[in-house]
View 1 (cartoon, rainbow, N blue to C red):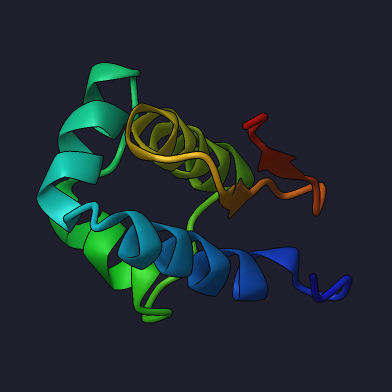
View 2: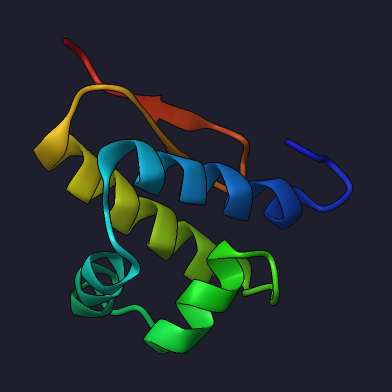
Length: 91
């Protein structure tokens, strides 16, 4: 991940994880919101397309939501956290 602006690459990798697992923005937002996420679906969609930046906590909450949905669907590399760490599920 880009050490000068880690959120810059995080959104693209998160969106890629969603595409690989066929997770819609609506599905993601509903799960993210149920976890206590603090931005609306429009802002999540804008973030995933690199149009806006979000605070680290919100980015990580989105990544956590993707990873939880991802775990329900498949066993591949998930979305990255701000630390650059990427969760890899066991087969």
